[in-house]
Structures are given as C-alpha cells and as structure tokens.
Amino acid sequence: DAFDATGLYLLPGAIDSHVHFRDPGYPHKETWRTGSAAAACGGVTTVFDMPNTNPPTGTLDALELKLSAARSSYVDYGIHGLLGDDTIAHLEALVEAGVTSFKAFVGNTFGNLPAPTDGALLEGFEKLAPLGVRTVVHAENSSILSRRQKRMQDAGRIDALAHLAARPAVAEIEAIGRVLTLAEWTGARVHIAHHSAADSLFLIRDAKRRGVDVTVETCPQYLLLNTDDMSRLGGILRLNPPIREPRHNDPLWQALKDGTIDMIATDHAPHAVEEKTRSNIWECDCGFPGVETQMALMLTEVNRGRASLMEYVRWSAVAPAKAWGLYGTKGVIAPGAHADIALVDLDRKGVLSQHTLHSVSRISPWHGRLVHGYPVHTLVRGRFVMRDGALVEDALGWGRSVKTIQQMPTPRPLNTAHYTSAILTTPAGVRPTAEPLDA
Ligand code: NCD
Ligand code: ZN
Ligand code: ZN
Image (cartoon, rainbow, N blue to C red; front, side):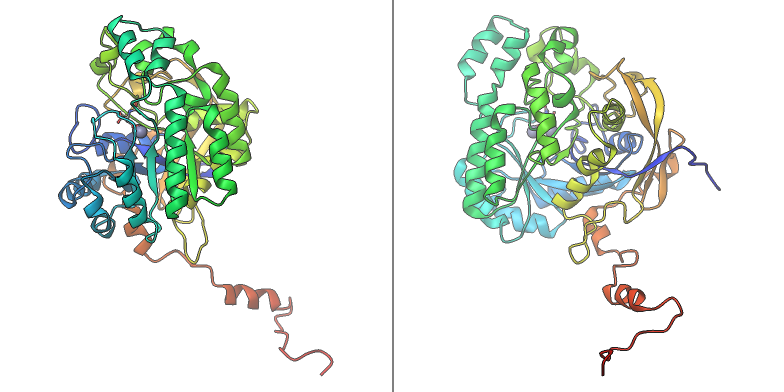
C-alpha cells in the first residue's frame, strides 16, 4: 500500500538514550507497551531503558524480567544495567546476558537506590574499561547542602529558590568532576545523564580535550524551561537535577553546537497524575514524560532558527548511534541504515496536549505549548510503527534489543572492493588494467 510523503522531510529516527519505562515494577506509571507506543508516536526508533525499576536491573534474574517485559516494545531498545556496590560482581555476566551499558545513580532519585561508593565506581570502571562498555552517570552529590534543603522543606517552601537549594548546581559540578577523574584514571567510557548546569561545562570541555571518552546528554526541559516556569507548573516541574535559572539555557545550547554536549535525550520519567499533583510539592515524584514530545519541541526550535535540521539530526540520532555503537559494521556509524526513519512535517503547527499522550502518565509541562513541526510517520527497521500520526497497533512487539540487531545480517555491508572497482570502471565498461601506462 503506497503512501504519500510529499512535502515531508526524512530523518533518521531519534535514538533516546534515557527513558524510564518502569517495567517491571510500576505499571501504574508506565509499561513497555505504553512507553514504547509514546516513543513510536514521537519519531523515536530506539530507546535505552533505565535500571531503577523493581527489581532494579542489577542481577541476571532482574535482567530476564526486564527483557521479557521489553518483548512488547514497538521500538528497538538497549538496556542500561545498574552499577552499584551490590552489582559489581555481576557486571560482566550482565553484559553477556544482554545489557548494553550501565547507569550509576551517584545522586539519590526515584527508586532510592543507594549511591555507589567511590570505591565501587572505581572498581566498576576498571571492570568495564576493557569491555568498552559505557556507564551513564546521574552526577549529583546528594549530600551537598542537604541541611539547607531540609530547612526549606520543613518550612514548606515551594518557590524556585527552595527547588534549587534541594539540588544545587554545585552538587552536579562536584559529581561530574569526580566521575571524570575516575573515568580518566581507568580509561572507562562514561556518559553524563541529564546535564543541566552551565557551570560544569568547563570540566567536560577539558576532559574531552584530554581524550577522556565522555559523552553528554541534555534534555529539552533544560534547554527550553527555567525557574521562571516554576510558579506556573509547581510539582509537575519537579525533577532531578532541577530546572535551573534562566542563565543556564543559552550556554547549554552553545555547548550542543560546539560539541561539548553531544546529544539530546529526554529522561522520560513518567509518574501517575496523582503522584505529580500532591498539594505538598515535596511529596511529588520527580520527573515527567518526554519521549513523545521531544521531536516536535526540537523541530519547533529548528523552525525558529535556533538550530539547523542537520544539527538536530546530529544531536538526536548520529551522536547517540556513535556513543552506543549502533549499527556499526567495521566502524561505520550509520543511523537509519536499518530504515529506522522519522518522516516529519516541518510546516505543521499545533498545540501539545497531555491528554493525548500514549504514556500512562498523562501529565506534562509541555501541555498547551505551541509547536511548529511534527513527526508524521515512524518506521523501525522498515516497518511502520506510527503512520499518519497514529500508532500502528499491529507493530506491538516489533521492537528488538539492539544487541540482537547487531547480530542480524546488516543490509549490504559496505564492500570497499566493490566500490573501488566501480570507480575504476570507465563509462564504456572497460576496466583499466593494473599495468602502469608507460609499460
Ligand atoms: C527519574 C525517575 O523518575 O526515575 N527522575 C528524575 O527526576 N529525573 C530518575 C533519574 O533520572 O535519575
Ligand atoms: Zn538520573
Ligand atoms: Zn532519568
């Protein structure tokens, strides 16, 4: 059945390095079915799921539960395993069994996983460095200013200042510095999750210059929102790290453009509506859904002239493909090579609504936001998972682990010998001989 792509742009599907699909453990927040439907309808063809599920993805049994839940996915997926003091002994086995990468919750957040000790981080990095496996780090030092936070919480303060005091930028700066030091020392690959602060960019620039294998993501919320939005959105906007002051927005854009920040992820962190709207803001769960809205939000910025379409493609697909080693045959990074595609309408305007989200969590700080540019069709390995803006229900379970895909035959691996002979063939079809002309 033919379809009409007139007027649309063809982009590689987005690769979202950071989603929480909550499955197993919290089906009232999200499931693989709903989360991956949201991804499909957001132009996202591959997601990487976080390990703070129940049970956390730090044992072989927990990984088996996660992989079996992921079988209902509409889109392809990688699995971040848990790096913590209790999981160090299982890291290699987890990689063997299907984990693509790890996450270390150096800052306390949803799931209350204990932060790894520095010794465990060091040991974990030492084990993973020779395997070339990357660790995502939630880089915040939760112990910084905790007494000030507590005083403000006790006083019931819900203003932007209290929000920031709870997770000050210095907590992020300190943890990033520590993680980069350990990464450089061990030669491990690391990835800084949900980067929010302008002040720590110098540490990353410096580490990259010295050759540390660090990749960095930021999220639409840190680029487009700031503490001025707190009074309007309250508990909806609570997340870790927090939304920061307006002065952080522009440097994060600049860092994306100059390559200090590599990519955009969403930190899709769904919670039930009642968990986000409690009257005491300090009792609201942190995070909100984002996998379905990222592309429309970012294409809007492209239309506004804030980024080029090619820059967006670099941040949404090329850089994550490279960081996670996707679709690489002989070092060739080719996002879209498996026909992972988003067809987008750059002219379409509309208003984002939380009521039509495919996520269980139908609450979003983007509700009511004007957007200009939408994904219209999404294909995962050549098959529609969203068509004409609607989820293709039949594609339930079409998603595969990226580890499995890497073992599938690559469509026409680049054959250099073939290309060389094609170039040497004259238009008349006469192949030049290898003999020197003056022989
Ligand atoms: C995330 C969650 O809800 O799992 N919340 C958040 O505020 N970012 C946790 C995380 O990303 O570390
Ligand atoms: Zn995190
Ligand atoms: Zn997260």
